[in-house]
Length: 590
Image 1 (cartoon, rainbow, N blue to C red):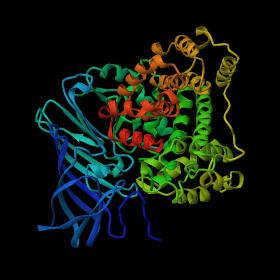
Image 2: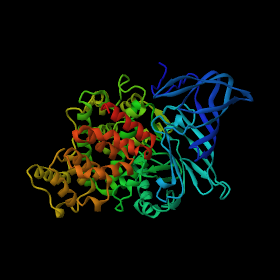
Image 3: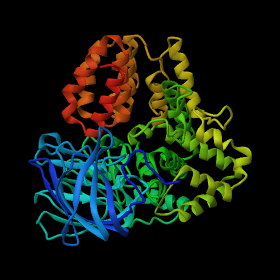
Image 4: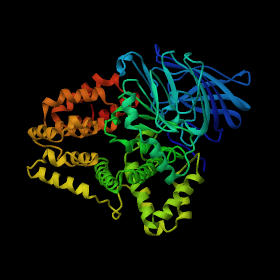
């Protein structure tokens, strides 16, 4: 059967792109990239080639000195435009000249006033899941991998970075040269340009950030090299050369993005406590689980995120201890059931392998949080079935066997059955992967640290609030679990007292405020609204925004304000966030 990715126009029977040479000019005044790209294919092509694109202005197409016939012959709101290149005659290379749109959904162009320094603009990309097509025409499916080189021109006062090896251009010229020798899927293409400084963290690790935050960022993630050593013990050799990080503006839609060699990070992870070090652990683990071995389609997304969450917790167990991991696992369990309840216990969206009849053409709609939590719980069941020693040997063989490949769930299960057949005797693999919700029986996590939280939540239900002394030394996930477990509606006076008791301002963690503001809105705490609006102005991380947005939509006194608030802050957010928020509001009829 011919492989087909429903999120892409790609037809693999036509051929595959294997390498691209880019020349990129960034024009901040028009908010566009002007690009010349020369593509090489694995085998010579005859006839047609379909590429994904989104609002690309194509200026020229040629192959071996002759003009290449082309047209945008299909269009879809989600998929974008199909670029149909015609007239190949046993050709294995072609060149396109084009310009991105100011509305390119992968790119955010920020004015100087939106940055920390206030003096220079900032550009960054976010191509996952299916947004690379708005930067360059491509086979925008994770099943196709390619290498690339790039020359990038930016204003001289800015630094360009990419998820690739960097070679220095002429000093002060604004020209930066990059090479990516390992094959990547299009969603891992990444570019940024801003007024940046760099700090070495270790022999293979470093961090970029705006000068105003570089020292805080370097301190926060100073132990990354140590994390890398533990990751290699579990997952095998790190095959990407360096591991650097870039701190983005607050509008970045995610906690982190695992772009190879250059993880993009949210500034909300800089707490001054190293309390979100596990975020970097997660993104670093992706260097193996996701980047080295990649889901072939977004229906197989759990292969990326379930594996990465499992690996993150295994590494964290070494670095922080079992108590921290047990607590995190209980928090993830509660979150899993919360998501299932919201989606519907029989919803196909709660299957690990998203059914073909499920979410259709939108890759982002298949990237549920359940892929992280339910996927990790499934892999723990596999570990329980055969013991940690055998499962660890399996992990190393899995990474080595499929390195730099994109695989389906079925290919993984075939490998699992060949290597660890006992798993299928004790674990109901089919139910875990293909059935909605959670299985009836599994090893549910337990945590004595969570037991403390559970008692405090029960006390609140009886009208007894915790004391400041009681919570002052709580782990971050105890705080999150407490806020997660509170009733959705509590007296406004209790909201006010809890903020003081929990010392939320002092803790400086926007995830705490995401839960807190959602409760305040649902509880009718009207004086909080000006702070909620400021939260929407400064935070782009969707994990934090969406609980508050749902509360605004679902609460009668704020429902009519939700759309108005979003429109006021729309320009501050990345297109990925804007599209997701639009979907949330439209589904609510707003």
